[in-house]
Image (cartoon, rainbow, N blue to C red):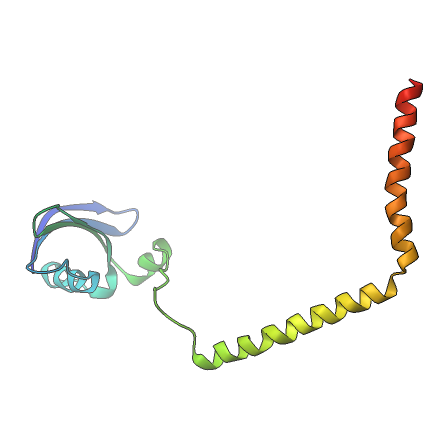
Length: 147
């Protein structure tokens, strides 16, 4: 992989420098870590202070353009950059088992509470509740007819 720096632009208020570079590679597009290490060598900075924002492939060629930010210190990096959640990290098997055990217990509790609530209600009260809306509809119809 060959990395050629095209443009550098200083942003003193943000304590960083934007670096545009062109990457020529043989097989697949290089990963961000490899680009970061090459930029660190070329610029003489620490890899921790470099954030690769984008890798843009040029269709049909084995070239890509890259945009990266190089920060002056870790404090400014943490203040400006948002932490990225890494893909593919799975929870520990013990945690997954515990959650799997908790779900059936929670469902059983919910079902019990539903059954208790159903037993407390009277079938007569349910029938009366159904009749009330019918009576209200009939009363509304009578009012309309009177007007």
